[in-house]
Length: 102
Image (cartoon, rainbow, N blue to C red; front, side, top):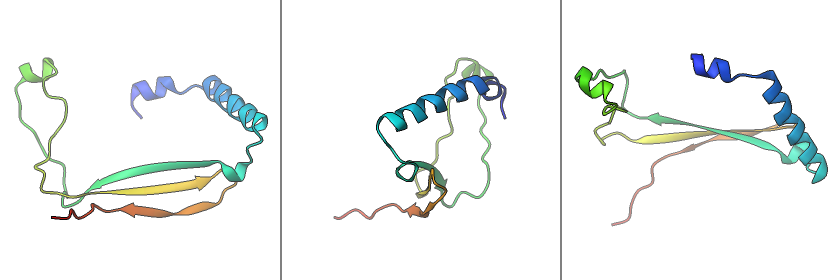
């Protein structure tokens, strides 16, 4: 875990958040079986290893280098996972790139 994330972790903040969440669920009579959490994870196909980049210290210090670019020849797929507050799950879904019509 990186340093900033570790310092952002706060029992007090989590407690406030969940107290607010539960009060709103009570206020609007939202049942746990109607509460879901979804997460997504993207995968770049045909990329099997990490790449190395070479650039000058001047570019790095000037924040001109912010992220790695890929060549556009790879496909990206997305995995969706979903769980309900009552513990039940929705089967994971995979989203593939669509084919354009010409």
